[in-house]
Image (cartoon, rainbow, N blue to C red):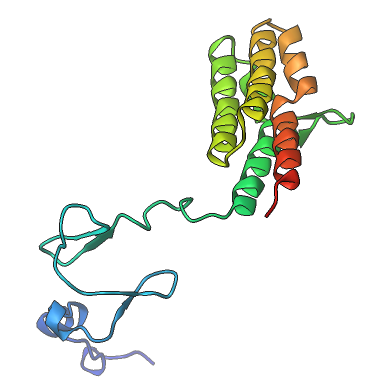
Length: 186
């Protein structure tokens, strides 16, 4: 049994266009605007020069105070992030058939000169984060010494890469910083 053309119902082109393109303006929108953290975003015009938010003519709102995803982290959250990055850089992978652990730092270090510079820059970011956590100068100096030893030794073509894998400056620095943080009053 076959269907005849008269049995098939299809909407006209004009009706299908109306159904797919809903049109409304901002005045018709109802309810408060809620951000990802459940706070209501107040409606209002631009209030001064970059004092926290900016609303353009189209009604789109930029919030400069909450734009930094790491701005409101606690000390423990920052330290956990720092330790996770240190593990990724130094001990994320295991060499198959052995118990030797290596990280992205060891892989990047295989690229002559440029790889060692990139790995050192990543290690220096960890030192900068330690400084942002309020680490005193003697802790930062020890961390910089670890980075310098690993950076200089890493410049040696083959032995330097093996030294990078075994020395693990980022894990040492995370341990130094953790011990210092644990000794501080809360």
